[in-house]
Image 1 (cartoon, rainbow, N blue to C red):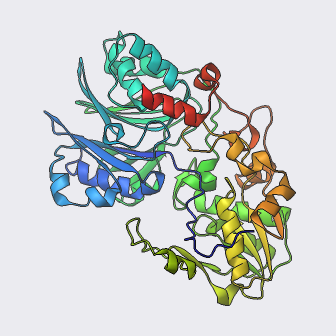
Image 2 (image 1 turned 45 degrees about the horizontal axis):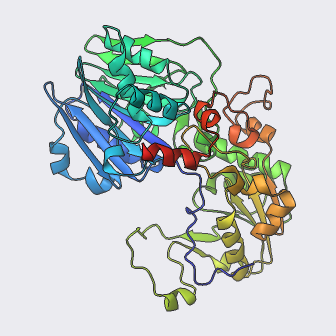
Image 3 (image 1 turned 90 degrees about the vertical axis):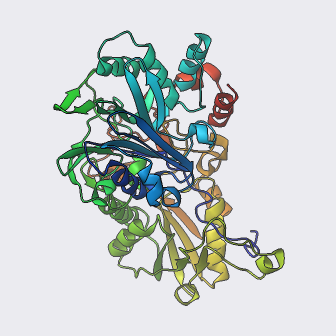
Amino acid sequence: MAETTGEDLNLESDRLREECGVFGIFGHPDAAAITALGLHALQHRGQEAAGIVSFDGKRFHSERRLGLVGDTFARREVIDRLPGTSAVGHVRYSTTGETVLRNVQPLFAELNAGGFAIGHNGNLTNGLTLRHELVRDGAMMQSTTDTEVILHLVARARRNRFVDRFIEGLRQLEGAYAFVGLTNKKLVGARDPLGIRPLVLGKLDGCPILASETCALDIIGAQYVRDIENGEVVVFDEEGLQTFKPFPPMAARPCIFEYVYFSRPDSIVGGRHVYNVRKTMGAELAREAPASADVIVPVPDSGVPAAIGYAQAAGIPYELGIIRNHYVGRTFIQPTQAIRESGVRLKHSANRAVVAGKRIVLIDDSIVRGTTSRKIVQMMRDAGAKEVHFRIASPPIMHPDYYGIDTPERDKLLAATHDLDGMRKFIGADSLAFLSVDGIYRAMGEKGRDAERPQFTDHCFTGDYPTLLTDQSAKNTSPRQLSLLAEAI
């Protein structure tokens, strides 16, 4: 196995990438500032770009920037350029379309009835197909994101009321989405028919709020009201709330990875406390895959709740065997090769006092390519660990995602190309085990996975995609090739 000396260990380099986060508020005098705070709480869902669109009763105002929320929207002069009592915002990690300013959301367009701004969390599995059809019919696209498709569909709808035009557009979509939009009179929200992507309703000073997670409500002191239901469209205006159910009823299948990794631990998703679910996943893992060890060590930060649950269930001490430096930014001076060769660790380092001479169990939430897991194991051995056992608090990731998670192609997924022992040898651990599919369902409070009617969207583990995959079927290309194709249009 290659030594890690000379490499900075970045535990975020081999992760599934978050989708995006959306936020909207209607009728509040501090709409833009509140939206900025909400986006700050949702920063974990996307770190590449952020944007806010506000409406002051006469005009829409837009600020969209590359980078983190705090780098732009913490400045008073930026918020002052976003007057009005209603606003929508978005944090982005790109899964379709490159990261350039024209792709930063919320997107805005002037329609026949007035302006319309919209932010999207998710991914349309027929977005490219619809895009080709729209371009062929004369549409002029201003971005390479699938979100722009809904703007064109709404603009072309032959209905009188905005909500009917919006719903007509939604009926043409496949895949996963949580939309938050703003017109000159309304705040609108929509969730896909299966509820794959999350969306919650809150209230602050009597004003409605839509957000991807409850943590965005907590930061501003808002009250959680309820989840937007799967397939539901909500419209807020001066008259209050209207709700629509334009799709045939079907059982919800929220994305199980919201609980494994994406949602913030302090959020409540689908009525479940994410932190408690992750602890329970760790406890289930301890029962399914015990290990003779001296200490349980989490891989920070994603493995922490599961490691606590594993340690409690196994009766083995929990210790911080890997220390993370939270103050290293992207622009920190890069060490020279000579300094790197001395073994410098900018972001993560082993806690030798905990690790040396011990049999340790490393707990993480998932393995993607396995490259980072391999470095972690070697780092523990370099710190003097006697044995290194790896336990993963989710099933093996065998299949790519098409619903807004940036996964590698299947041949780049370690679990898709290696059996269990092959994976163990690749990462260099003394033993390796994953939580079973039924085990993760038990952690969610279910008896197990219902094979006939699965309770969650779990395709990364099972290959059971719950919607049509029109773009993939039509092109027979990889997600990366589809992304490149979209950018080339």
